[in-house]
Image 1 (tube, rainbow, N blue to C red):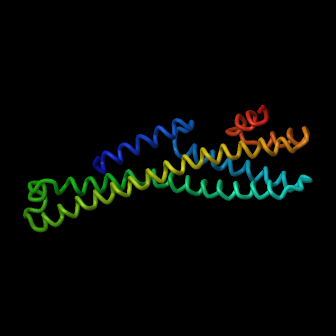
Image 2 (cartoon, rainbow, N blue to C red; image 1 turned 45 degrees about the horizontal axis):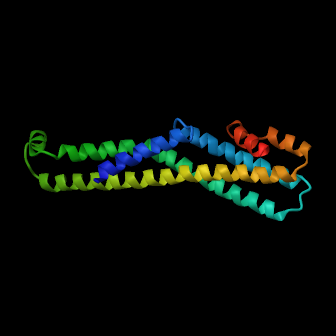
Image 3 (cartoon, helix red, strand yellow; image 1 turned 90 degrees about the horizontal axis):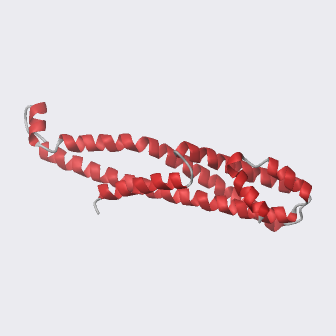
Length: 191
């Protein structure tokens, strides 16, 4: 499989992964990770304010918060690169395409000076750009998978905490859950 085919395949896989998770674009993922981070911070605050003696649960909350924060940063980077990379690829493709035929260079420059070196350079730049694009898409796919895993871990954590809380505390915690996570918490409480 050529680098161009691999890049196109990963691009398609990434678009499908976004849709599978229910996101239209990276901005929606950024908002969801922000909400998930807000939810875990609220959970930590509630746990600290409550009369909970379990340091294991607090450690679990803080560990999950740290990983969600890192995932939020990764999502931000993926979103930024997803917006920037198409321009970079277009520029590399245009540079390589310009030097595909000697006639183009001859028409523009009036001579063939530096044609061969520039043609090789254009091919190398395009190849390196595609390799960079492949790496960025792979990182983005991993980032989305991490988000999905962290969302499930948050659901499991809320299930464990709900089992420890009295009914009144459960009602207060549920009001602080962001909209995108309401279904997760409701499902966890009904288990």
